[in-house]
Length: 82
Image (cartoon, rainbow, N blue to C red):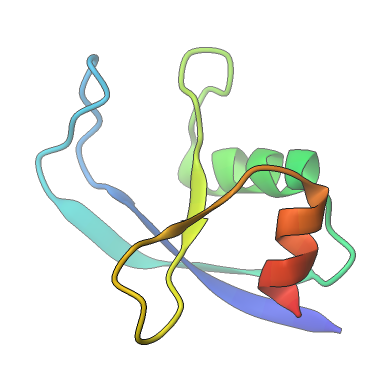
């Protein structure tokens, strides 16, 4: 099964990992069997981010929960897509 996801990211990248404003109109489709490494690589490619120079942290928000949940490993990806 393929799952659509929205990518929310800083519109203007700053050297010190800060941002000017958010842009959230990017979207992509992932497979339910994607690994964290492949997910991060796909996000980097989609957003034109150099993975060597920038650390990509993947988070999601569950409706009703105010704190984003960080995806730290393949198991976290499986929980997110389920």
